[in-house]
Every structure is written in C-alpha cells, then in structure tokens.
Image 1 (cartoon, rainbow, N blue to C red):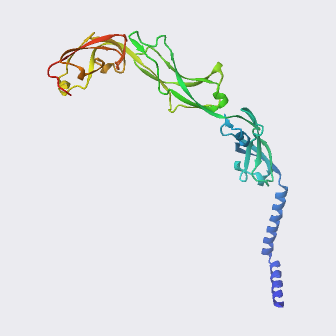
Image 2: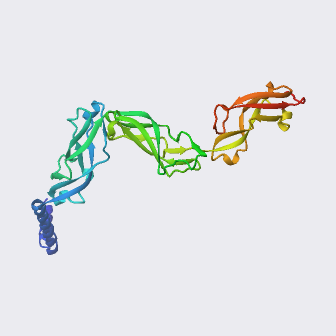
Image 3: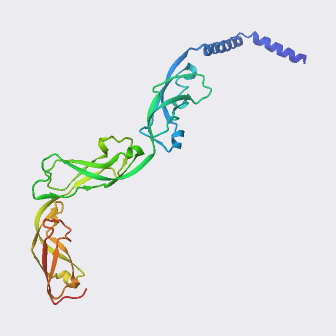
Length: 340
C-alpha cells in the first residue's frame, strides 16, 4: 500500500515538473474558460428565417363542413433574436418553426382575415420570435359544390359578313364540349347563370372553320365569380362553324335486299326532277357526284316500271334548299329479276 502511494506521488510530481504537459493543460483550461465566458456574454443578433409554410387550422371549419378556397401554398419570413450560436444559419431553418392561421372565429361562409401565429417546434427554444413578414392571410370558407353546365356558343365576326357570298350557308355551331363541370364554394356557384364559349372569326368564310374558344362562366348582373375550377374533360374547347355551298346535283336512290344479279346489272333509274339544289359541306364537295334520296327495298319492286315517290327527309349528304320537295322515281326491273 505504501509503495502505491509513493508511485502516485512520484507520478504527480513528475507531471507537474513537465513543462510541456503543464503548457497543454494550461491551454485547455484557458480555452474552456474563454469559451464559457464567450457563450455567456455573446451579444444577441437578429436573423431572418425565410419561407416558413403557413398551415390553415381547419379544426373549427371542418366541423361546419367548410373547406378553404382562394389560397394556395403561403410562405412567410420570420425574424428571430437570440445568441448567434442558437440562431445562426447553420442552426435554424424553416422546418424548425410552425406558422398557423387561426380559424377559431370562422362561423359562417365568407372571406376571413386570419391571424398568423408563429411558434418554435422546440418547446425549450432559448431565443425569441420578433416578427413575421405578414401577420394575416385572407382565406375564403364555404362548403364545396359541383354543378354541370351546358355550354352556349358565341361567334363574333370581325367582318360585316360571316360567309363569302349568298352561295354559302351555315348551320348551328358545333361545340367540342357540350357540358362542363364547375366546382367551388356553394355561395359562388349559386351566382352562376350559364357557361359561354366565345370565338372570333375573320368572316367571309368559304369552308368549315374550327376555332379554339375562350370559356367564361357568367353570373347574373355581371357579378364576378371567384374561387371556382372548371373541368372540360378536354384540353381545349373548340367551336366548328359549318359552311355549306349551294350546288345543283343529280339525284338517285340506293337499294336494300338487292339480288346478286342486279349488283352488277343495276336497274334503270329515272328521277323527276332529275336534280336538286342542295347545300353541301364544303369539305365533301369534291367527292359528291350525286345525291341519294334514300333507300328503296328491292323486294317490293315488280317486273317492269315501278314508280316510287320520295321526299327530301332521308337525304344525308346535305341540306336541301326546298325541304318540302317531292320526287318521282321510276325504276325499271327486267324479267331477269331473281331472289336474294
């Protein structure tokens, strides 16, 4: 036991007599004292923490069936004050804070200016939140509603004439989308009267024209409708302005239940009148040589000359100028008629 004490005493004496060791120990002690004093006496600084996301507290509105409208992701900047080593750039970031929009007073549909409350996620944070880049945010609350609307076309012509000349005619415009769905706050949806698709054409048209339309949701008395979204089911809404040219073409008929022999040896057909004035889509003009008045059941025909009266109601290739016109069709069937 005595020897151990003697060894420890000798070791301590030898350490204290070693100048290099004393120098190291002194440096470490001095640095520790300096660090403690620096941290304790360090001045406070202010620093801005950017882009802290705002969270809407929906606990109260959700109980009333309300949702938020008219607001996307909102971010604020927070100014904090504290010791540099507590609030430095490499210490604090946006994820260390929570900014909440307080909704405790939301009790009816409408627009509210919500107070923003900023807190540190660390409950033991030893620094102070001094200010925010904004203190309030506007949010609209209401129940969500979706309605289906029929789209109404509107054509505006820059020229005094829509069509090139009197030889041309048009018909009702054709919409690529006839119905749309509109979603938004129930109060705003209730203001809607109709949906309008508008196109502008230069006019003096000689052929069918398809234009991209501007879609608008119209309210009564010119009121502005807010916070709605529109689902067209397609990327664009277009309006086709059909253009027809009035021409005179021969008329004929088609047959059903025709025997094989008459496919290669068709019966003689004579129509009175022989021609018809008809408005034809300009895109089809190059392929039309004659106009079919409709279909005749070959099984009802007899050998010899058959007389069939037809009107214009079955014409598919255009719009007859005289809708009430009637035609007498004389079909000659020879004695070689066979069964189907």
